[in-house]
Amino acid sequence: MNKLAAELLGTFILVFAGTGAIVVNQVTGGAIGHAGIALTFGLVVMALIYALGDISGCHLNPAVTLAFTAAGRFPARDALPYAAAQLTGALAASGLLALLFPLSETAGATLGATLPRGSNLQSLILEAVLTFILMLVILAVSSGPKEKGVMAGIAIGAVVGLEAMFAGPICGASMNPARSIGPAVVSGNLGGLWIYILGPIAGALAAIPAHRLISPQNPPVRAA
Image (cartoon, one colour):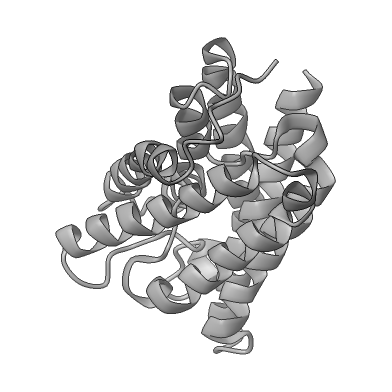
C-alpha cells in the first residue's frame, strides 16, 4: 500500500503543479509563460523521482507502468493497481484546481487539459514520438551503474522539460495518460482525449525494443 500511496500522491503533485502552472498562467494573463510551464513540469518530475523513487519507482504515468511491465521490469499483477492510483491522484489534483479556480469564473478554462492545436494525427504522432524518447531515457538511466541511477531524476526531468518546451504549444506534450485524463474529465474537455491515451502508450512500448537494440548488455531485470 505504501507504493500505491506514493504513486497516488506523486501523480497528484505532478498534475497539481504542472497543470496548475497552466491555470495560473491563464488567470494571470501570462505571468508564468510557456517556458515557465515547461520548467515547472521538468522540475516537479525531477523532485518526485528523488523523493519517491525508492518507494514506488516513481512511475506517475500509466504508459510508463505498462512499458515497464512489458519489458519485464515490473510485476504484471501490480500494473492495474498502479494505474488506478495514478488516475486517482490526477483526478484529485484537477478537482482541487477546479475548486481553487472555478471554471465559471475563468474564461476558457480547461484546467490544463491537453488539446491538439493542429490535426489529431499530428498530435498523435508527436505524443508517440515524445513518449518514445522519454521512455528510452527512463529505460537507460534506470539500469546499469549506480552513478547512472543517481542522475536519473535530472535526466528524466530534463527530457520532460525540453519536450514540453518545444512541443507543448502544438500537442500539449502530455506523454502521460493520467496527466491528460485528470483535467479533461474534471473540466469536461474530452475532445481528442484518445490521442493522449493511445499516443503515449504506443510510444512507451516502442521504446522497449529500441532500448534492447542499443543496450543488449543490459537485459531486463524483473522487479521484486
